Length: 72
Image (cartoon, rainbow, N blue to C red):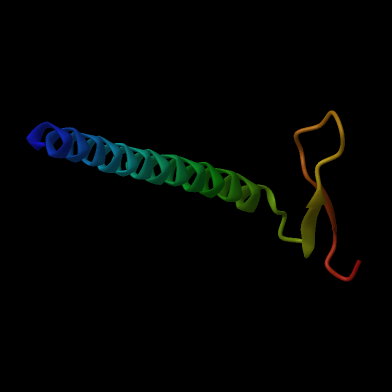
């Protein structure tokens, strides 16, 4: 009888430990994604000219923004 409780306790303990591990991994991945987005947004802000145009899209086979007038 005691063995059943010990086994049940170990199973619950292992499952709870796995969920905590997965939770911390997800938090790390989210932090990395947010960090990447911040870097990309900073790069875009540095490229925006002072003539009133805004980035619209990045053409195919290019890595530069296509800028358009804000009224467009």
